[in-house]
Length: 168
Image (cartoon, rainbow, N blue to C red):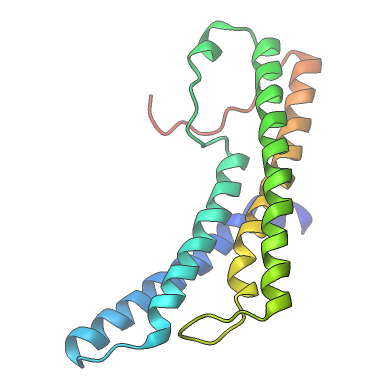
């Protein structure tokens, strides 16, 4: 079960938020064009679903090594050097993610302390601000997995996981 969750966590979360975004947007367009009426909550749901999509998608991209990067040098080095370079990149990204997690969590705590609510739905902003620490938390988890996988490749001299290529 944990293996299935590990493979599909971001995928299912992305599907849920994407469906929420598309369905709400379609309903709002129909309401606006057909009934000349739109809701206050529709635009907020779409906005916050998109924010969750972006942060969870960033974590999924870390897992698959799908972030944009300059990898020209990777074509000219051996498997051990490639693993070492990926480890270095993961360590830098890990450091940034830990700092960002800390500061994004601070924002959530401040929002909870002062009880800020969204303008339209009047829902606590904590639920929407949590997208950032959740995204960075997932990124940290995926970076640790990537680091361990690359460490194994460095030790064994086997090819590193480079993710699926989008373009040739």
